[in-house]
Image (cartoon, rainbow over all chains, first blue to last red; front, side, top):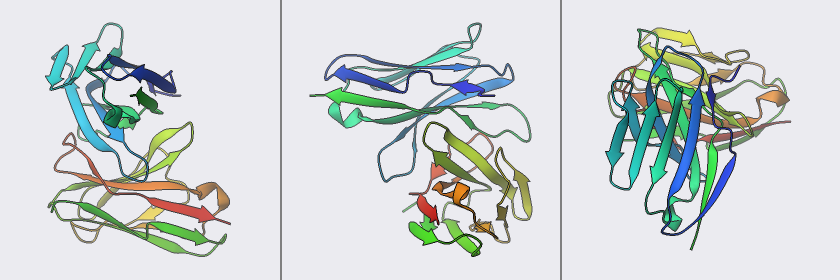
Length: 113
Length: 112
C-alpha cells in the first residue's frame, strides 16, 4: 500500500516557466513533509520541508504548498532552470518516537532550455 | 566537510556470498538509516537506528542485517545475497528523528 503517491512519473517544462510537482498521501498521521532532489549518481539532497501547522513554505525559487484536508502537497519551482532537471522525491513522516520517512516513487523533471 | 560516506560504491557479487556495505558519517548524528532504490518503487527503508545499539526494522528488512556499535558507523550486512537484492543502496543520517536526512552517494549492488 503506497502511503505517499507521486502519480506522474515525469514532467517536462520550458526554462523560465513554472514546474508543479504533485504528491498525495493517505496516512492521516503524517504531519511533516519534505521534498528531496536527486541527480544521477548522487544521493538525494534535502530541498524544502513543511510542517502540518503551515500551508505554505517558501525558499527562494521553491515553494511547497500543503492542503491537509485533501492530503495533497505540491512543489512549485519558479522560474524553472535546466539545472533543476532531476528526480524529485516527496517524503512524509508522522510525529512520534519511532517516526521514519516514507518516500514516494519520485518524479523526473526535465527543464528544456 | 560534513558528509556521509559509503563503501564500496559499486559491487558485483554472486548469490550466497556474504557482503558488507559500510556507512560512516562525521556529523555526530544519532539517527542513521538504510534505503534501497528500485525502478518504479522509489526509496524504501530497510533498517534504521536511533542511536548506538538501538536498531529497528524499516519497510523491507528481509535478507538484511545491521549493527550500530559506534555512533558514526552503520554497516549493512547481506548474509546470503540473492538476485532480488540487486539494487541501489543509500545510507542516510540526521540529527534527530525529524531532522534533515543527509544521504550518502549510494552503492550499486549487482547479485548474480
